[in-house]
Image 1 (cartoon, rainbow, N blue to C red):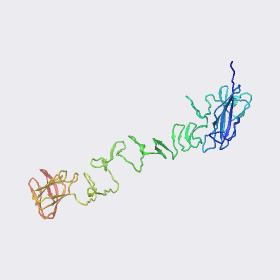
Image 2: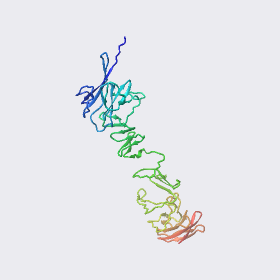
Image 3: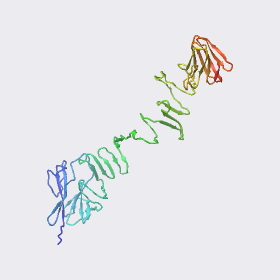
Image 4: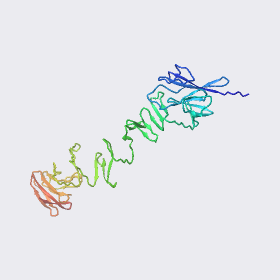
Length: 405
């Protein structure tokens, strides 16, 4: 024989002084007025016709006033619709009930009569209204109505995320995923990637910039490093470049590669090369000066020989010094040749381009000779402690002819 257990539902309320346990209050079917510093708990009681009952686990649904909170009213489940019961829709609660197996949403605060008044309720059938500590739902859709929201964070609601009106915003930092799909940061906000700060105060940290091509309209910086800078004309064609450490013999080099380089203002070459005990040098293949040009000292090649054999001074180029052959440093043309020693030798000038002025000094107590025409073996005698200027001419058998000045 089948016995019917047609149940009745009651929603009970408890105003507690604790958010984690029931303290300082009692259960009632009437929702108490909210008080700051107290917490509203609720549970559902089911009574069957045979007198047996079942009660859901109590759930804390409100707390004390916090620094931040969700806007709008909170949905409050009231179970199955009952006659002669007061239902609310105000700034605090919007009551929901179950009527004829369908969810209904209260449209206006009222006290129900003996029959259900559909004008005071709104269809709510697309949703399942749940109040629980843990929600497990498969293929579920959570719809936030109007200006209401979902808060995900700590129990005190002092730190967490508010999901409302299509956006997700952090209530402390102000970081927001906007409803139009953008990430919005406050002026002092930041984003971390891999435990490191990626964006801070509106700026991207340079250690995260790793691209093959970085195109910007305006680049401003205080410090940085790069291997090469290229310069393009208005048509986008590369017309020059600046590179660093690109030479084979040194890491500390600045290489400027332009067809024409203009400097506005004074250009200084300062400092001292302590490794080679000399000042820093300025090297150029050709150097043209429209105004005055001065220098501290001529580039000098010293010939020291104590016999009467021939001596060969190589003015340009490079090679290995021998007893009677002397070479300049690579890329360093000679301006002055100094003859020293006791020998009355003959000096021959080699490897010089034509029409270069050359000063020859006899820095000794003995007369010496300089070949001026190598083919005819013509020489000019240089007295002790004397100097003379020459203009280089063509070469014969690798030796320059000279024009005495």
